Length: 314
Image 1 (tube, helix red, strand yellow):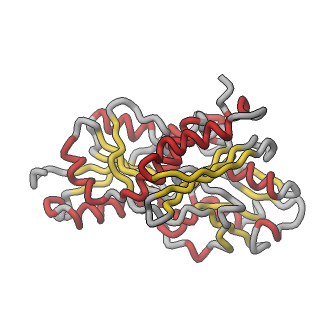
Image 2 (cartoon, helix red, strand yellow; image 1 turned 30 degrees about the horizontal axis):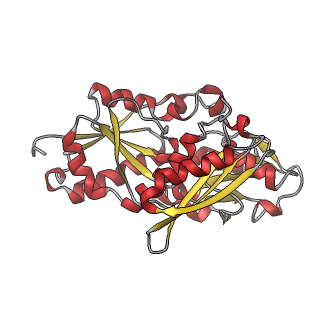
Image 3 (cartoon, one colour; image 1 turned 90 degrees about the horizontal axis):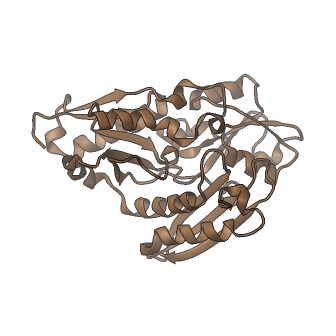
């Protein structure tokens, strides 16, 4: 890049989104000498619809694109050069003109359990209230622990932790990766095993998008991209896309590299929001076949009497 050019990083304004944007800026300035000057990389905060509407579940107001749409529009206008996203918020189909050439190395994808009353979900008394805005978490909680109640709880990490402290809910679940990036992982009461709570697709991964026509951005992002994360997240997103997944559908998926990174293990979960109709499965395959592996497991879980409920029925 020309030494006089600036790179403008777009981000949401939540503390976690800003922490992720600052992490990307630090990595860019460390890897690209032309961006080392303090003023060479700007962070531009853009308010998204998902941030503005906090009184309703995401499933009622439009799903995943609520956290990315305004950033995409700003990028296509040329107001920003890059956008930093939590990959679990990114729709599986990107708008025309937007590309996703980079993902940072993934953090721990598991969910953290937070409570002042119990050490884990299994220890909560009957009728305890677990706060979450995630249908994925809701479905798995109700499937494993039908004696618990789930209440919609939206807001950023700090807001949800405050509601817990105020006694609005008895427990809540948050992504461990987000807590770590905020330096708040010591607030987790425990970490949930993936056999109990399978993560959201792409949870723990940070993605960076740019305009497809802005080739200079590809060059500066290449040193930041982590191939194993790209492989696993691509597999999970293929699984989600084939199931036509959105915030209206409880879907979970986790791909992990095995056998020295040459093969993938993908586990998937699909259910109804009330925890009924659970279908789970797992597949292994070559890492180079990540997208096909995700598609194949999705088709396996969609086959059967519950397939229409999961968006596969046509």
